[in-house]
Length: 393
Image (cartoon, rainbow, N blue to C red; front, side, top):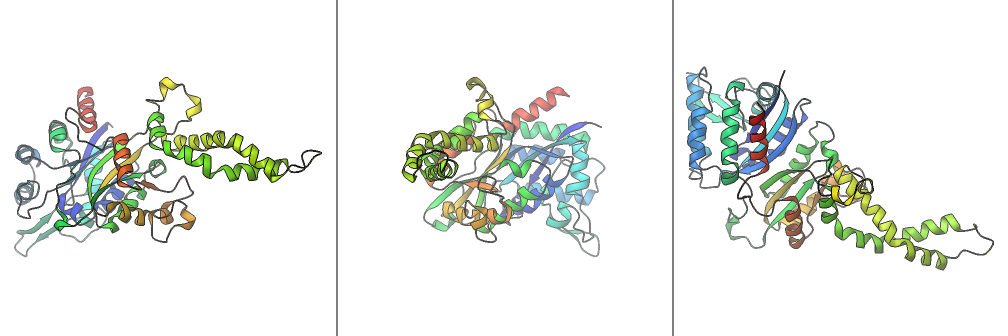
């Protein structure tokens, strides 16, 4: 058995129809596959021309081979019959015999039988007429069908990842609608502690916004990045949580002395301890988001220390900030509206499923921290991941 790097490419129609969450849920639920990178793509003609040559194994049924070539030629090119940018989402997965596992156990092959045990069986369409001719061919996901071809596919993706991939913001006109915004959404670490459909189910809930996903990145938040990302909360905690410090002090010290300990005394003590309490609570959030206790490492380690992953996404469209926040729900899952992300998937104030920007200004600030503000011009995580994998083989 070998630990391989495989890929799943969610196709333009699947993204357009908001099937993304359901597909991702299937992909991430398999116990032997680990998500290791994600990236949006808008492929060039150069990529499509080369991809057509290597997508099909030699032994493939001629009719299906022809359907694949026609599909890629028509659906993945920027100049297509529908006149819309053909966005694709690339997910990189790693595991034992990942290529075959992904293809056979998760994505599946095309079949005339109405089955729903695979991604293509559920989300793809494949129809033959009575004479056996293919009348409809719509793969929900593309992957390498043969381990022998996988390195070629990966090399091609790595070569085009920077030029053809990244942030696809500003490509749509939205019918001239006003207030087009781009909101950052981040699925928090507890969604990735074990293989599950949970991340996909959350993304499926966000599809209720009718917004477009224009950026995606698997992000390992370091302690330094965590402190920067959540930095504004520390000052907020110092003011908002001071009453809790006073309440705790009153409960602990009332009757502890031979003299009266008053609420005024508790308030004075709270003034003295508010910042220390805020820092303590702030560090709990940083530890949760990074998997590392900030107090356990030195300053020099904080730029690289991380033991947790998040999935960051950009949602674009009219009034994106408010639409995403409405679907996200209240910070406290117990108070969130039924059907919202935090009501359905949150556990407490910290482990509440997902984060979303609360203003256009904060969206810009947060995007800069996670690396989804500007597309790369030299290399990217997908290129680095694939090249490292191919060099080790």
